[in-house]
Amino acid sequence: MNIGLTTLAVLTISDRCSQGLQQDTAGPAAVALLREQWPNAEIRTALLPDEEPAIAAMLTSFSHDGVRLILTVGGTGLSPRDRTPEATRSVIDRDVPGIAEAMRSIGAQSNPYAWLSRGIAGLKGPTLIVNLPGSLRGAKESLVSILALIKHGLEVAAGSQTHP
Image: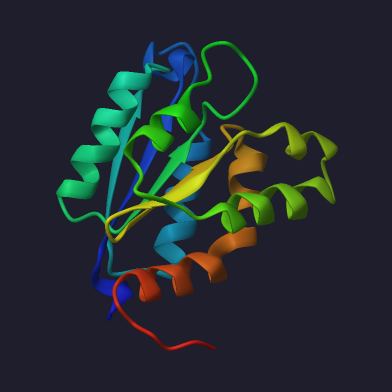
């Protein structure tokens, strides 16, 4: 499978950004990192408030439209409005817990608060969905830490049985 010619998405989830009260920096940073890895990919973006039904609907829409990787940015913390993991859990078919475990473990080496992230990862059909933290630093460091896992995971989810 040629992952370089696929469709990817970054969904930023933030009440403040969706209301225009704060600029989204983490979502564009995730897009830039994806662009470095997959320069020919179509990368869709969206911005939503912390509303669980809207998040689940967008994840479902992206996956039905052939998006192979969806990164969510934000909504993984402990505040009452942080509902991204719950929305993700409601749409995925299978968990991929090692991705979230890797992000927390690697992130905690430089920031002990990484352990408080509730982000998850899973598959909806062949679509891999990964919850990243909403801070610029957290999103970038988390994504960099799992890029190799994502690449291999996308190949295997697409039906490739090769292993490194």
